[in-house]
Structures are given as structure tokens and as C-alpha cells.
Length: 377
Image (cartoon, rainbow, N blue to C red; front, side, top):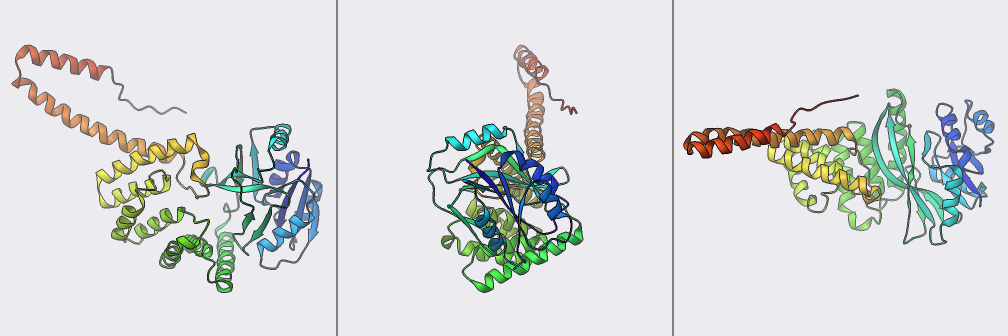
């Protein structure tokens, strides 16, 4: 059994050594299509034994990714970008044994991707990255997607993470990247007006560029064509809610919540947006409901990481979980203090022995409750 890493690159010397070091022991060959590097990228790649094939850049990521497929000789094809790093809890030997045990019905596997900015995971999602040879081609000139044969079982390789550092760039570099992405997405849409997935990515691209009005237009268009999109990404709802609230369109946000909450209570991003709605409206009941849903959704995702499917997840982290715990503690402690005051006021109205017994019981119960929050490092 042979495993090929398939990559495309252009001027990737910043992250390339980290990427190649992370995968070298897990693959048998590294196939790279270079689209015009002028820095040390090719020199670095050759030092890791990569096979490099040079093709001029043609404004089409899928074209070049499919070129890398044509050069690969492995039984399994592993796709990783130069600004990504493979993090594994298992040895290369165990990884290969795992693949050998897969039956022919397993045509591809999913990995959890994490966008990294500094030391923070800002986005997490599951994506197919490993395919049996002959089962995959890519489409889309930008934000390209793998087109794979349908499979009843698609394993999530939970012992692996792929960290993506491509957005940890300078403001100028990020601005150029967003402009290129926007230009190619608009070209996708011009070439094929029924390419509704382009609206999804344009919504997020315009939002990152703070053009919220245009972002909302594309998000709305994407949702309008939900029935026409086989891989509809429900994370658009959390994005649209954020856009509405940033524009002060609270009524539209509230109406959208009414529509989606019955079926999206396990989406951590939607739950956190509900908490934010409560904060903006100064509604403690909404904050409490959102925090309760968030904790339940978070715990469900921890038990089953595959449950979120291919949705993007921005809020599945311990800081947001802790904030929701804080809101719940404040709410229930506040209620408790309110009723403790009423209890104290009621005691003089009781017979002395009964009041003494209840007061003693209450004091004993309060002694048994440790209500001091501590932080340790």
C-alpha cells in the first residue's frame, strides 16, 4: 500500500517546512505542482524528497489540484496545503494498519480542520482529505471542493487534526488574499449563475471585508436556493445572524431565530448568537436559554465530533463554554439569593420551633455548598 501527498504551491517558504515535516513519515511520496514560485519553496520541497511539477498559474485551484492527482502513484491520496500542519496521536505504522483494515466500501476519510490565529483556534470544521485513488476530482476555481463517489460510511479520523495557518498573515497580505478570493468567486458566479455555493463563500468574504450589506445579500441568496444545493452548509445561518446583529437589524435576527432554533439547538454557533441577541436586547431569559443550549450542544459535540458534519464551527472552545457557565451560575445564584431573602423574611411568621428547625436546615445546606470560584494555572 502506497500513500501519496498531493499539494500545490506558490511562494510558500514561510509555512512549507513545518507542513512537510509533519507529513513525511506518514506518506510514501510527496507530489507538488508548483505554479510559479520565486522564493525558496522548491528548494525546501526538494530537501524533503518531493517530486515537483511546474505549471503556470491559471487562476484555477481545482485545475492545479487535479494536476497533482495525475502525477500521484499512491493507492491513497492525501491532500494538504502548504500552510497546513498534520497533528497526529498515532504512529505512522498504526495509521497504515488502519488504512489496510478499511474495506473497499471506504473510499475517503474526513479530518478535523482548525484555523489558527496566534495560539487560538478561530474556526473548526470536518473535511474530506484522504481518498482512494480514482475516486476524487476537484471542482471550483477557488474554494475548490472534492467530488467523490457516494459512500455509506465515511470515517472521521479523530486521532488527527490539520491546523491551518493561512489566515495568520499581515493585514496587507490578508487584504490581498481576500481580494483574490473575491475576484475568483465572482468569476465562478459569472461563469455559472447556478453555482450557489459561490454565494456562501462570497457572503463570508464580504463579511470579513466589513461590507456587511453585500454579505447579507449573498447569504440570503444562498439560503433561498437551499433546495438546489446538495451540500448546503447550515453554518450560513450563524453567519447571517451575526451580520444582522452587527447592522442593528434585531427584528430580522429574532425572526430568523424563530425559524431555525427548533432544528438547530445543537449548533454551538447558533446558540452563542442567541446569547448575543439576549445581551443586545438586555433580555436575561434569552441569555439563559442560549447558554443552556450552548452547554448541551458543546457536550454533544465533545461526545461525537462527527455530529457537526461539514458545518464551520467558530465557538466550540472552552472560553465560550466557560462564559455560558458564568451566565448560568449568575442566573441561578441570583434566583437563589432572591428566595433566600424571602425565606429569611418568612421565618418570624412561623412558630418558633419550626422556624428554628428550618433555619438550622438551611444553614447546614449552605455550609455544604462551596460557592467560591477559584482559578488555577
